[in-house]
Image 1: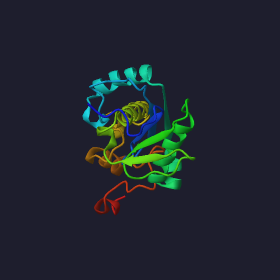
Image 2: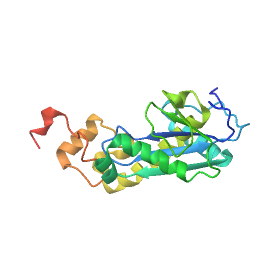
Image 3: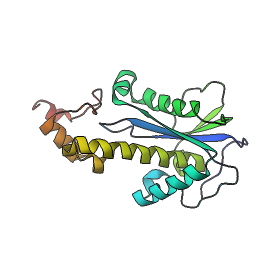
Image 4: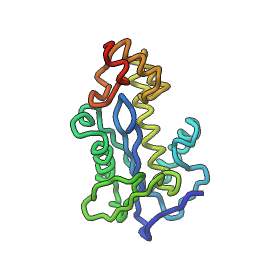
Length: 199
């Protein structure tokens, strides 16, 4: 079972993002404050869970959390400020909307910018260590996946319902064949070097 908290504060929030490495779609962050007595043996890093488990755990998290928020940063802004800044901005936007305001922030990964005067700690692979970060990873992943499923209907040839915008061989082949869409991140390397000459 994952650890309940890093700090001694009962208002510690965990935050994480999904979709940083994708070629299309937003980067999505979530922030979660769990009650001090919250326990759940199934909650883990969202990448280690099945889609069915993520979906059922999302309902539990949304029902039991003291508060949670989810925020998308879209492709145009990712291209403008870069993916790292967009990921951190998405987390900050989530924290802006938490009520109560967190007294301590734990972040998955090793990069974050100070949020007002709230102390924070970056934790490598934190989504596999702390419940609130894992909960945030589940919310970020499921909300982003839903977005990708919706835009798949608009552009089914990229098969986003399956690859969710990640750089799979199939996705890159579709970019090579059909070009890019308004949902692609134009600042990203959408095709390997050896394919670029044939565009």
